[in-house]
Image (cartoon, one colour):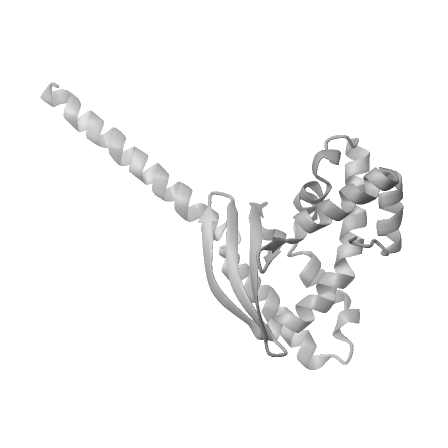
Length: 201
């Protein structure tokens, strides 16, 4: 190799190293400057504030907004509906996301009100625009492992699935939804979700 090519190659390798560094660092912060774990901590701080100040915090529109905005309902809906997602029209997909948001909201609010003050943040694993935040929840003498799967979109990390003691919420939904669709129909699943009476078995 000629000597005059070596400086050029060195510059190429240097540029590649810089690109890899930027690709690794930027997703962890996002445009908002918060990492996935920082995003969860900020959300839980809001929850704790409302728990301490309100008699019925679950009724607070501000609290519900803080919780709901931390979720990626489109990705969660896609995973939960599985193979049936691709069969839906764009209009049906939008409708399903809206139904899932309403169905999930009340359950999420109640559970997070219990977890917020009892959560230990163990760490985060970030791969490009995806991340997993590992936490431990202690409640009424029991310890539960809760891993938050998050996705970076529009500069904000949002939760698209939770793995509780090794069990994925989205996959549990999928099992229940498949059973409902096979037994009745997709339309009946949506109707059931609207009524918030879906049974897991």
